[in-house]
View 1 (cartoon, helix red, strand yellow):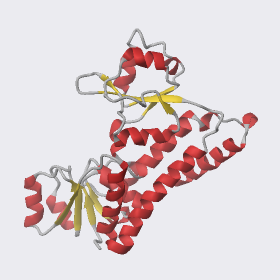
View 2 (cartoon, helix red, strand yellow):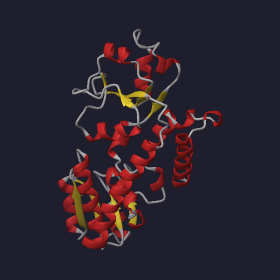
View 3 (cartoon, rainbow, N blue to C red):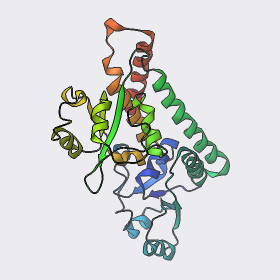
View 4 (cartoon, rainbow, N blue to C red):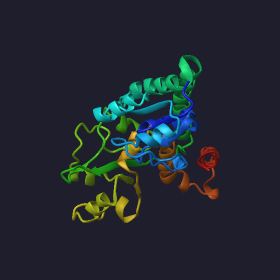
Length: 279
């Protein structure tokens, strides 16, 4: 079982944190910029880590994605540093395996594997609890929008892990049947989503500057929420936090004492629970 680890992937660091092995982290790459990891020292970038800093941290194991440059791999080998590379999952089945593999690598094939498997189960149990807390009287529709490298408006596509992660916000995805990333603006206008989640301010500017879209209810009512697309690569602590943030934005904040129902009471309980978790 490694005592000191360095992580060169924000995605893997997020899962390691959720499993509970972030206490072993003595170094992280700059890509691991999650607030809850801010106390962990930096060791450079994932593609150009500072080997001397890693050595001085008495690192037992470096964990990274499978795109580590050969030159960096050679540096680790020359200095006797063990490197574990793992592939980023494309669906929930692969994500489950990754939780198990990380748990095994960090805590052994018995205790560690069990911690990884348990963490995965607990994550989705928690997400289900959030969804069950949504007042049954409230129905919302939503979509996620981002701009690709050509500047085209896009959304998450069916069959991808990102699409499935977004579905846990409890709203009806107006693009739930979307098979290609590019969004048809007429389709978006016709769908009239209650809420729009977007990747960057450029997306919001794009929508507001479009003559056919600027008067959409979600825009005029400011029912928009910034959620970076890169966060969908963070499949542990950030996944749980962002799912709650989306649900809170669309559902929980609308509940008032005068409209109290058993569902609202449960939502309040979940709200208090997650506030305590985040703090």
